[in-house]
Amino acid sequence: MSGPLRYISQPEYSSVNQDQKPSRPFKKAIFIPAIATTIVFIALVSLLFSAPSGFPKGELVTVEDGETLSGMAKRLALTDAVRSPFIFKSLVVLFGGSRGLVAGDYLLERKESAIALAWRFSHGSYGLEGVRITIPEGTSSAEIAALFEKSGSFTRFDPLEFRRLAGPKEGYLFPDTYLFLPNVRAQEVVLAMLENFDRRIEALAPEIAAFGKSRSDVIKMASIIEEEARTDLSRQIIAGILWKRLDEGMPLQVDAAFSFVNGKGNSALLTLDDLKIDSPYNTYVYKGLPPTPISNPGLASIKATIHPLKTPYYFYLSDDKGEMHYAETHDGHLVNKNRYLR
Image (tube, rainbow, N blue to C red):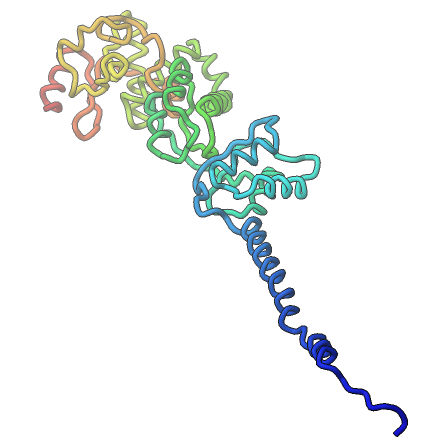
């Protein structure tokens, strides 16, 4: 033998075995960070790519001029539009740079992620589409306000504010089909209708001047014609009758004007007591045109007003079928009443 035998002691053996069995703690060390990473990843995906369960669908959110990004982010978080104000702010800065938020009204029509909202708010993507609304000829300002309110499409429209602003402009709110954004306000509607009136009436300016009556009187008369007649011919005939009554100092005696007195614009609803009401709109009591137009006339009625037909008639009435009947004398008018009105 060349040297003593070497025995391996138990401690050395144990030490070697411990070094050879590291697998179980090592797997734990890897597994725990993996779970944490997955949780963080899922949370981040949720923050970025999904909307909160309480997302305010259908709401209109306004970014005011000069509003801070932090303030807007907090507002969105309070309404459950975003989960994290910090994430939203970071995304807006990423997408918009120094531009930041773009002021305006944003429609939250459907659930959207923080990424989608940040992109919209930093690029002024309001998500608003125009809504068509038709204003018929002869509609009063109060009726226009009711049409907007009934539609349910205009979230910022205040009918009371509209009536306050539009009332003094009665007659000059042009009846037409309009395309308004759902966030339109009362003042903007009034302005649009007034501007439309000016554009549409401009072509008639020479004819109005040639007719010899003021534009104010023409529109007042046209608003009456709009309510009293339904066809081009009847409009011209009635315009001729009413202008003649004015020229000869006779009261107009039109029933439609009572819509401004007691809301009874229909002759079938009027009583003898109604005809005695002391009001400048009572054209049975007061001669001349009413103080203001009684509705908003269309072009056909305005044209008929400045192009009246001369006839021997002084009286007219409409029967149950809407057909007009004319008379030269009051006695003839009474005959027509007994024959055609029930």
